[in-house]
Image (cartoon, rainbow, N blue to C red; front, side, top):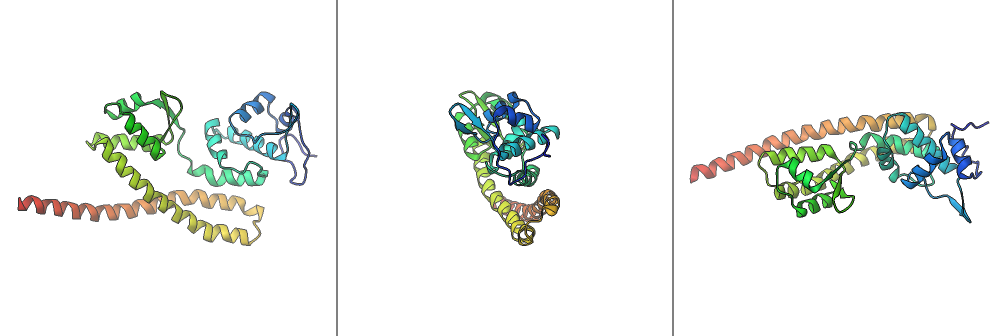
Length: 254
């Protein structure tokens, strides 16, 4: 017998009303409606004014409940599930969550353009906010409020501004860096896909190896970051040396 806390067998296509769905997943109807409003659940099949839910909704609810129990906020869960397949099975959703969760940035922060300018110690400038939106660092909530998607990256940018670097120069530099980092990320991800992931797929995607795949992805993050930082330090040292020598040479000539 399948209990309320267990995913449905993949072959079972029974449908539920919202009350039955809540009971099966071990949550309240109010929670189901709240999760639906946040986009955490795909829309039900409507018959007149009654919605009917299937096993994909049960899988999603169980995953949301599990992540909440582990300390994830609804905002973090929303970001995790945004790109997940809407009709994924419990196994698909669990694997998607396991692979993506280690790479999510910290919890977003809500702020305003005036508060950002005050933190950076610069005059408020709507054009700078537009640039930050274009970079994907912030998104507009309404006419006044902004959502900082990666607070750690924003903090680093503010520290650079404190060194006397103009805002426009920083934004331009970050646009270039983002493009380079995106290519680096693709390189590391493709390496994993072409090797460890492909080997798992070729073996028939055995479920008993899912935890090993998840652990490999989790370990990839610090290893890739360490390798990237080491390479950056080496290249930075050489580039700084060349720039200093060129600057001193021009100074000497003048």
